[in-house]
Every structure is written in C-alpha cells, then in structure tokens.
Length: 89
Image 1 (spheres, rainbow, N blue to C red):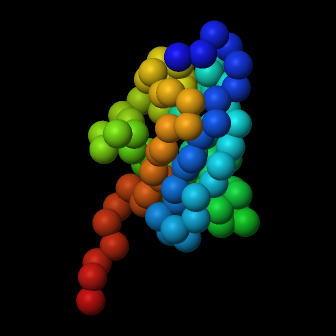
Image 2: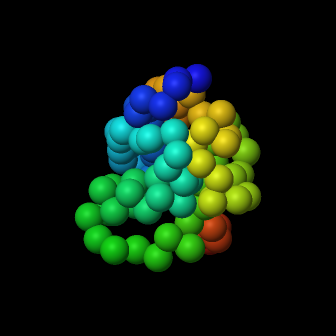
C-alpha cells in the first residue's frame, strides 16, 4: 500500500464496457470513484444510486469507505454495474 500518493485505478463501467483509468487519492470514497467513472464512461449525468461497485468479485456495501479503507492497491481493477439486473430476451 502507498503512504498517501495517488493510486492508478482501472474502473470498468459495464453499461458501456469502457475502462476508465483514473488517479485516486487513498482518502477518496468509493462513491466518488463510482461517480467519476460513470461520468467519464457515459459522458452524461447518471444516477449513481442505480449502480453498485465490485472489488475482487465482492460487492462494496458501504461506498462511504475510502480506497485506503478497502485496501485497494495501485493498479487495481473495479467494476461499476447496474444495481438491478436487466432482463434477457
């Protein structure tokens, strides 16, 4: 883990299947990471509450936690996906 320097993160937004590369301070909340990734990937304002974040396959239940709180390492990958599943037809 770093001592306060910004981390490089890769955040995949499944709505667009774009991977957003971003620098994140260790004290940045997961909610802020999600908001930034959604804005950059979609190019429009979306309701962040309609999306969830996964890290290492697990759902991040408390998005107020910071990158440091979750022990997210440099160059880690996160996924932002809709909170509700879309029906398959």
